[in-house]
Image (cartoon, rainbow, N blue to C red; front, top):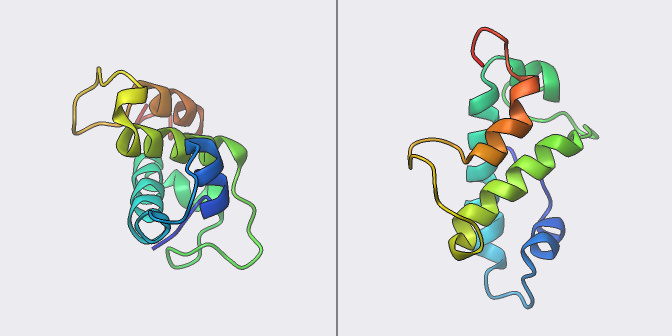
Length: 109
């Protein structure tokens, strides 16, 4: 599964000290949040990220807006008390959707 952010950047953004949750973040949270962002972009994800067979090519640079979207989503999941949960559980938080809207196909937005 694709990871659009690094573990160190996530730990820094979430203010996570220590390594107790490293495996959980690296193997579960980061790929899941990255997948949710990619799924939200739908067909445009391949264009925006240059995906090849669903994977990032070696040396690919992930746009900062996508990294921020993934980190915001991780923050909702990992530290839900930090942010208001005023969105439907089957959708992305409004802040994440707002970041991704300009990148989506206009017909889907």
